[in-house]
Amino acid sequence: MTVELKNLVLTRTLCLIDLETTGTDVRDDRIVEIAAITVHPDYTTTSFVRRVNPKCPIPSSATAVHGIRDSDVAGVPTFAELAPELFAVLAPCDLAGFGIANFDIPLLVAEFNRAGQVFPLTGRAVLDALTIFRRMEPRDLSAAVRHYLGEDRHDAHTAIADARYALAILDSQVARYGLPGSPEKLHAELVEVDIGGAFRRGPEGEVVFSFGKYNGRPLDRVAAEDAGYLQWVLRQPFLDDALSLVRVALAARATPPR
Image (cartoon, rainbow, N blue to C red; front, side):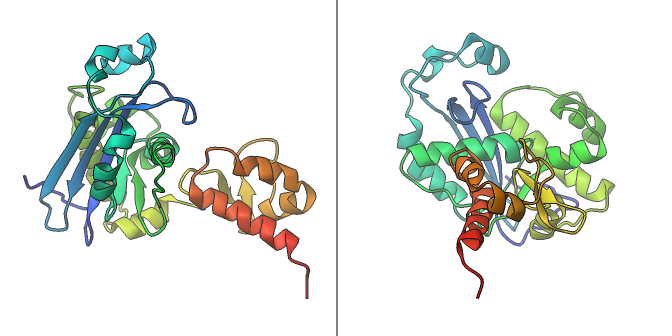
């Protein structure tokens, strides 16, 4: 299948991802369905869709959202069993989707970690259509479909449909807002400091916290004054780019001036 993109300009493979899960807690919840649409530089596409056995009951509140029940995943592989195949699909790709920076990617990284495999983000463009949407038109995916595509959302809460919508919305956003068509340049436009937005730039360009009791405080100052807090941050489910900033700040504090 060939997809028509009017504005995104691909020089490497782009993968649209969407997850259905047992809940919204990155540390405790698990994936029950994965969809990945891979768009190659020649604009041909391949799809990867798998149900996943989470090895725990699916809450009724989650089933009410995506319709997946315990019986639907009873005989399917666990994430650990699917991990090598999924890793091979995602390895060469930039990543895109809707709401992936703060949920899908952190949960995916956590699932790979639990399976004993590191899923690196360094060197990838990560394009979250929700980041653009919230910046320009703060609403949800259904509203985004109406706003950018001029239609009602069908097949809501099926991972493959939502991934397709995310791709079409992202492509439309590039033209509407005059954004870069290159995933690398668009990534640089969307990500101020780290993918998950744990940090932002302060008034002098310094890296400052975007969460917690030190919200707005410079990272290097907190490292000097409360290194224990940064050690706590390192134990939280932040993405590796944010954790790398924390480690660098701690290392700089531990290195005596020459």
